[in-house]
Length: 387
Image (cartoon, rainbow, N blue to C red):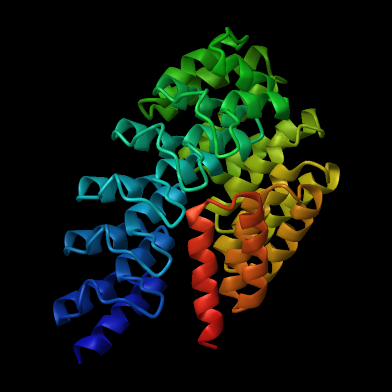
């Protein structure tokens, strides 16, 4: 009876039915019962970014540090997906801030990689170590340079990390620092930030950056609007206006501003990334994927947009499509063993274990001493043997 109630609790959470969740808890459903993926009801609520249900489950005593089969906890999952409201809930309710994901990264690393500025700030404000490196040898700063594009959003994230004490000279497993990566990638603004040089920025932008740190988005929006009266075609101001609208969950208005930025300069591909992110928050996956595709079509040699598209495909569970994108990326940059690692993970999710082993062996070839790769190869070999 209790097992059935507990299964129903997970199902009700999947459906976002808060009343049913409330009733099932009263009826005796186990708060930390796990499904076949090792997910508690709380983990399901986090994946859905359902704040009311997540709060109710946490209030009922659900463990914010309970891992699923992918080694994620509700806390780590919230951080990795930019769900800052739930992230704050988990931190306030006992999240272990030193816990790491299966890549050896804290919540700060994936939020820096994926461009979740507000989440990055929450992590830093709560004392998560800024120079922690994962099992790939990457710190949050290295991830935001290597997997970012040096645009407006990533420059702000990198600026925040540097202010918090991120070391630009910290080297990855290949002996290359964030500064060296930024130089090789031609990220002009990032280089200035890492070298602590003065940057030419509009007065209004300097003002609103201070307001961002205290979540004063309405006030920041007013300042940008006033500046746009005089500089109506300044793309940077349009970006910040759209960013603030997004943080205020006024997504349709945010999209309108991002598209104004594109209309001013159709080659400013940065805006396609912002529109894709906004559509993701609106739970419009097909439209978000189409935005990535537009950027890829305009610049097929730029790996940033294809990589982030593949990342999103993995989040959606579309591993066949993610593998296809990774194959293209590896064709462009065969030395990127992190691409091979991601490909291997998608192949394993598809049950294609022999191919997963071959992909991870390509990563091992480039970095033979990496224990993370060896561990994942061993796991795939075990799954293959059990078929």
